[in-house]
Length: 95
Image (cartoon, rainbow, N blue to C red):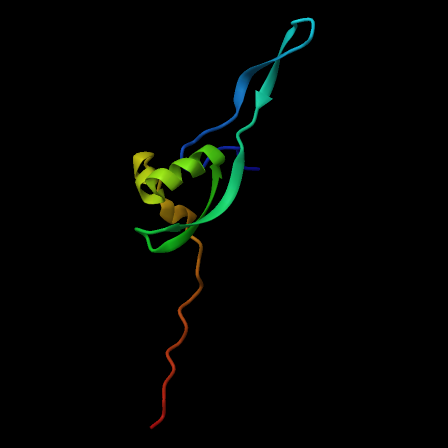
């Protein structure tokens, strides 16, 4: 099973969070990252990529762009490229 981690920024769970009861007893709890699986268009690579990203990263992608953000975090988007299958065979016409 994959780690719950953002594919681009590397954001993962916060395991140091505390649950505080009515009697003010502090116990550890986990805050998970809000991950979404999205198919996004990568302009520089001219292809679709399927990535698991946090919602916070989605807002950053909308602001900066997918290619620029991937370059900033040194992520190879070719690893997440969706195969579009093979190109259709050319149609030959008989004259």
